[in-house]
Length: 461
Image (cartoon, rainbow, N blue to C red; front, top):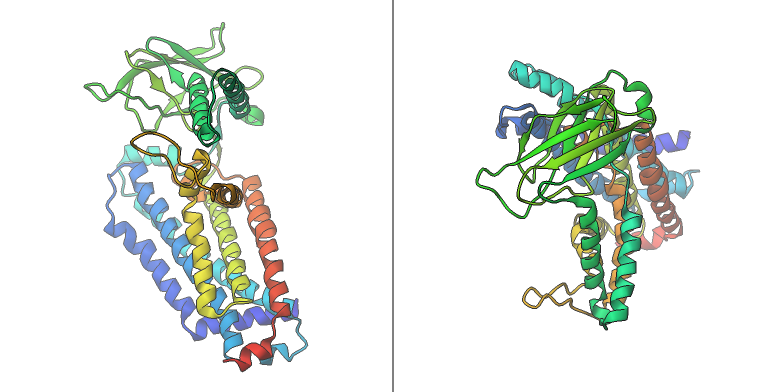
């Protein structure tokens, strides 16, 4: 460990020698303090946090991510290119210790910068909150600057997939479908099956049953919030739609009826429901009556959720920064692995190309959904076909499987909406992002660095 810490300290000294730490610190502070001053919020608690949490943490993540890749690529590649690694390699220090020592130095730099910028965001958030109107401060401290758990309806994906395949087989028995069109037909059938779980026809009532799980044991006497979102194909003259809610145990007196609510589509709505409306098993039954002449669609993914208090904002904010730190640790491993066998410019380009792939995951997902990289003809609606689909679609599926594991841990969205980031979620992020993916990449990087002929690389400079 002493050798690892020595290499890490040398990485710190290099960062200070090249003024990297000071430059990044100044840029982070400028983003934290200057960005909220340039971007004006709408005066509401949610608009306030949208600026201070969403934008500032996003900029902090981008700045730290780019600097991490640049430093991790440069600290190893330049040491090799400038023959400085020869001095270190001549000492009784193993190659893997050099590699891990540099990784520890980079992640400790990131930790210091993340704590500095995170403390500034937290302090500015508390200070700016005192300038809001009293009513908005109440909303801020009860709905935004909190840690709320989320309970959602049961996942019907398996049931939807099974019913889709059944309908597809029935369709194939009745008519011939070209193999190139099978993905499009399957997707159409799946959307039709999903409609059963999402649509609320006019003058109909839809029921959801949400299991609160273990949380039911500490929610007695605690008010809950219902978070809903719906879409519609038609827009009325007022732009809103009327509905009434019923929450409680069916067939008992423990039921709450709301006043008719006028809600706008394509937007999240949160409202409080009285406490103790769930049954002894922790099941909360929610009914919605569509009092309009238009069908409403509540998306399976985010159309219905129950929010309940789970903790304070300070610790939740710290856990969110912990997940961002896991991302930085993974980027440091990627940069060092690239520099283990590439020159500095090529390693940087390669690492940035990987980030572009991550940011393009939406495009890859569309290709996987349609089953082809050529897309759908907008005029005829026919699905294109290419020989490359046999190679690229499985490759895209593999890339998405890896990317989604990392992207699913999104602390910025959770913090800006007041949702809880649990210790288990932080532990899962550390295990999957740092230990699993970061560990695999580190083993590859160490193996490549151990086999690299440093003298040959230096002699070619």
